[in-house]
Image (cartoon, rainbow, N blue to C red; front, side, top):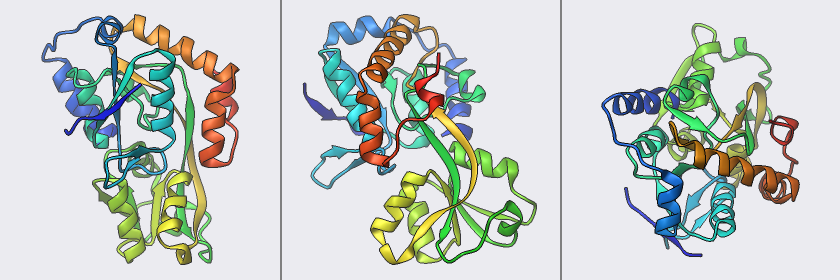
Length: 269
């Protein structure tokens, strides 16, 4: 199995752009048949979303979602081509046939279901407000008057935008790496993200001691496929079921996040 890269971010912008493209009449094909015929599966990822996916200066990909994509390709006996995208471009790339599937922290939401279809859940991500260990925030009211960083167009952005108390200063950045830099440089006091990305923050600056303070929501994530690709969707669901039963998806999740997959994933129908 080979892994190659292709040069080329999230709910609000990504869905809007993709819906425009979708309604413009992009031609569809049998994605699973194409994957089989080409002997290759093209998977969109976000290389700025450590520890889910990242790429080194040498071009080497790593992360939990990279491992999941690699396992999928290996189990299906095809090559893996990773398509690096930004969060807003994950869905447009799929809709315009630049990728076959999306494995990129893609939470299953009603808004996204208007544009693409999903596999059953394979993982889960909490949305939390991260703050220094010494900070005493515990509720949304504590964010009023503060600079709160979030990555633009993500489910994190959508959630904090929905629940924030008026007077909360939400500062949006284009990717997770920039949001993290803003937090560490003092441009923002808090960071709305997944707990795993707070680990990345602390690796960059151990003295920051950023930890989850407020849990906003728990989202399950699925593999994104184009609308109508039911054959591919069904095969992905079969693969996820088998990978949950044999423990391999749980092993990847536990290796990266130190926890077992939650029941929202393992018990999903």
